[in-house]
Length: 453
Image (cartoon, rainbow, N blue to C red; front, side, top):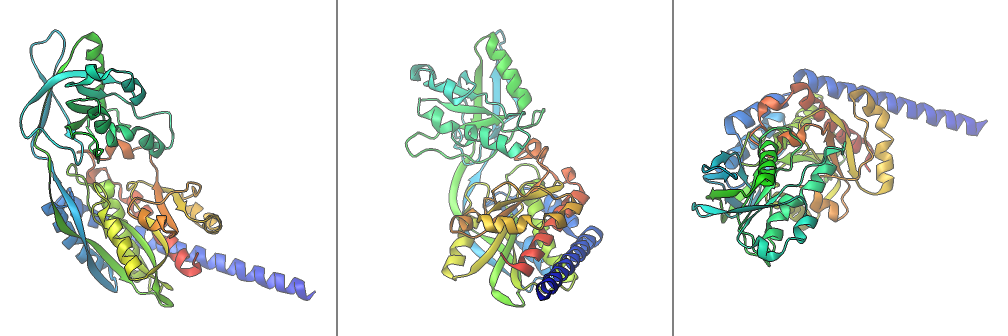
């Protein structure tokens, strides 16, 4: 009898806690959906500052903006964390193609890949050769590659429902393609953009040269132009003219921007929620990753507006230089190690401002089970997928040393239409979807602070 009474008491406590959590979830949602400032914050960041590559004047303006936004959100303290970042500049650039049977060059939309060398503003002219995959390229003799421009015509796989899997599959043609081609003596590389889009927006993005090869110009073209180039190469020889001024300048001092709510019970233990403040130098950087930054600031604002006193200290971190160096994430991790700070969870939002669908969980299995046990609380908000085991790029240095990490997963179907393009602009953001992402982040932070991991 006594055992039955104890069991019933425990069940009553459990039901009461679940009901309270559901109420808090509803309060968080209502606060953000009715009074959230993240959409207007993103408008200012995107339209008044714009794209903000590390080392650029716009990146420095974004630091000032983020510090002010965190202060206005009510953070107990806000500070700048020094980060030395690479400073790559694009300059003027162009690509012209001359097809078989024509005497004229046709200008084609293009973007140099990030961190690539240019042509010093001179015209590089050469014959284009095509390879549909690395395996196909390996079979081409070096004598047939030397002095040519290699066109890696690898398509983003449309059959993969999870588009980030497609990104991982096609991404190496951007990251490694220039080095692979240079090793055989190529003069330059053109890649079919790492893109799901049925359009002609070229996508930029980071690449790096292997230490053993000569750096060569590397550019991307949109899917429509890539289709045209592929078709014309079946008809005969194609000549290309590439001109680009892109180059790497000296390293420059920049900053992560950090806002904190001090924990009521464990002020020296931390939960991080963040995004990266830098973007590529095209478009507005609205989805990548202005969205993640304003959502993280919204977590601070919402918790403060609701009068919540989290048990652990909550930090919103605007990381600098995710796109072409990850220096901000490395600097934050180094500082945490030097200061012997204990982090119980780090969450990143860096997959766009679309409707949230779940969280990737890069942590121990018992910690995954704990978070998955909260699935019923998230279901009313359209958040259901907790099965993938991944976090985010900026928090990956913490993940490697054992800090539990999570990544917000919005609906992925349109992200790689816009990613790293002129089309990643504020106008592509829906205010409800953006706010719902902030809701999910704040709800996860609430649970982690209440129950720990």
